[in-house]
Image 1 (cartoon, rainbow, N blue to C red):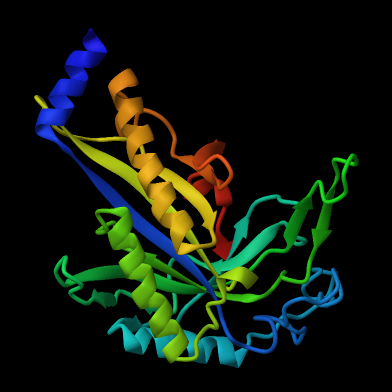
Image 2: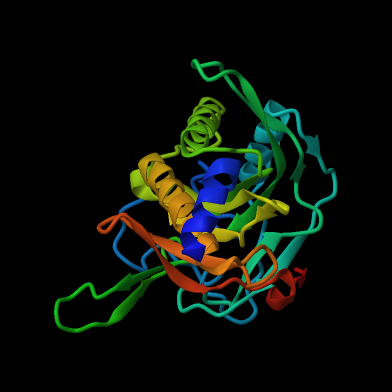
Length: 295
């Protein structure tokens, strides 16, 4: 009965989905961000990982000029601020396909700050989505789980380790799955037109993390639900369906528990295309857990 009453209140007062997208675009350079190893797709496993990508002792990374140029080109196109001084940082975490035990990324001073992407009027009205930043970073390798029937093993392919990425982070101004698709469509067209990225999603050139929560109307005012990050969405269809599923799941969760933003840690979930649902992966670390420091 309490659930039914709460549901009626929410349905009468309404709710709004709040979405921020982190889009990882692989830059169209022929070599990696800190080494001369090839970025070609489809090579045999572990044949395109240099001693720098493998993080062997004593190696000296050298920044790829083409990656910097592409980041600047993107920043200019979206009216962003280009930081003439930017800093790489070590983002420390353990994962089997991350040889160094840290990812080289940017935190305090990214190469691109601000900017916006204009969504044309497609019958739903024009809208401008502001960007927080776009920063350069290296990709990790790839874990292949249960590739051989019956072995239940995990194999590591480090060909992607060190591949240059531009991570484009939007403000949480997107309000629906359809609007998220509109934003990503415009962003993809822009990246392709500028020759910044090939944006081939089948090859992993464009991957999206969606940060989603709800603002629910209650008799006490608007209540935000805990934020969930759905990781590594590799198609616009997956982004749409993940957002639609999370909207309904989070509403049901709020009605059942009343939990709001700050009551529980941020949760990371993965999209299961087979069941068309999201599944818990882990509780999200805060920035302090990554122990960022200048690289």
